[in-house]
Image (cartoon, rainbow, N blue to C red; front, side, top):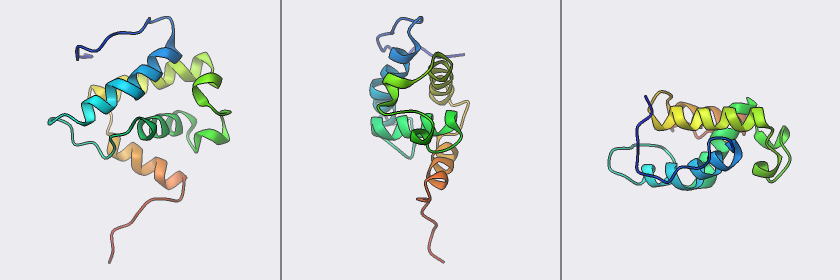
Length: 112
């Protein structure tokens, strides 16, 4: 179901490198395209959302910084899988962003 977006591929046996490539290059480039209406555009925002989601909370409460140097194999695989689901529009990035911001007590509610 994953589409080919003409981005260079990283070795499938290195999930950390794949996660970094997806969040630093692929997702920001897709976000700047006309077909995506994602709530974020920058690499660090994608990384926050993905890592918070796989940790089910603020990622740096669970993973030492910098995350890409401390991700376990299981966490890296989960991050790659989530990135691929977001790219394929199988998971709502807006909902994940809102959940991440809620965990961080930064969700901006609309004025009454």
